[in-house]
Length: 487
Image 1 (cartoon, rainbow, N blue to C red):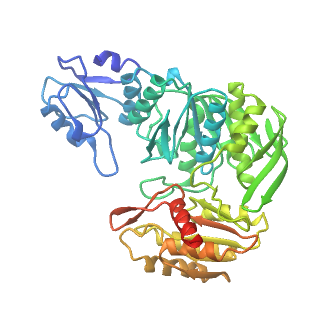
Image 2: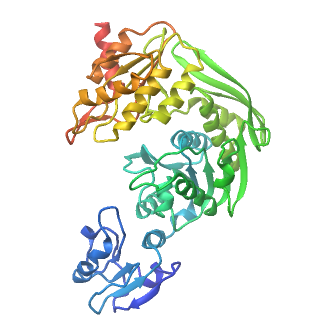
Image 3: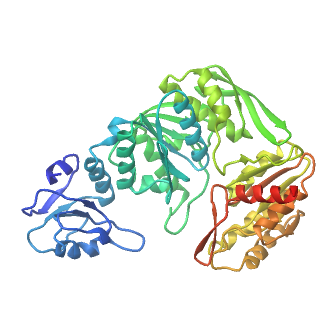
């Protein structure tokens, strides 16, 4: 691809011009520099790509994109831009021939609910005959290919590469989670979403290498609504007006509020042995009965998100109703059939905010006992351990403290920190460091009417100990334990 074609939609000033016009590769990792490539200098948390401009020139790169003046030998093109991350997104879109223009692109942002909503949307659209790709926290899905995710929102080059593969494999839509970091770092730059969705907003991802303040976190989320044609937002969220301030898209709303364009009414909790769910009716933009085999009020919000979106694809109500009953997400309030006497589920809740929301939701079903099994990760904030201990001690009838990913720490030291949080409450607890044995304990001691949640691991299928990831999928552990108990 020529340099002129690659930069046709990008603003830049030309600091130097070399003779080579044909670009052989688009590179932003200095380890991948090759002759004829265009190297984009990206500032990272550890390395600054500008420090490798000389190396790029020495390795005969054809061009360099930079935010600052750099010294390189003559014979190489140097393009200066205001933001190299935005430039990388624009260049990536061009490199892959603007694949987003061949897809209906759907971006979902918010603190909670993104993952579940993406899977609900994919389930409905594919039931309606729309082959749909997915990019999210757990994985990227393109046809029958499932690729584990490293980040909620990948780097812009990877996003565009995925779009290209989706378009080539006949996908008609892509639904993706859009993190605040992804927006801040222009990972979804270079194209305009057809539809942007806002789920909710709570303080999160604030600290070193993330966001300096809640205000910055909110501002990054709001960027989506200046980069989409249609915005669909949660009318009930306290921050919704701030999130859509300055929007350049049309806006639709959903929620329980009577002012919402699509609203939920007559919500009923469904509680059967081994099963929790919810039903409700929609009013406003469409009127239909909905039943979801996932628990709680937040499941209503997630499904409203999907219904509001899928209306734009002219999906029938019958298709939406059927798909929502079947929608499941690995590791997100995932119910595992174990007994007809009690309910057991797996959930990714791994901080105090998500654990509190989960346990409050389950408490509403008035279980015989609410049992919470969890641990905390090593090499992470000790404050999280205190907070999660206090939340579980306050809301669960029994807490089973165990290991998560201890990493370089001793599991008992992490457990002792969690116990400090529980000590602030009157909650009962037991400690069983071995997670397999802890799961065995809750299954063997499950009582009629119990709701038991295994929190923290969710979709993860490993346990990380001293730099090594050992296979450990809670579903497999449960199956093995049930087999042993029957023998």
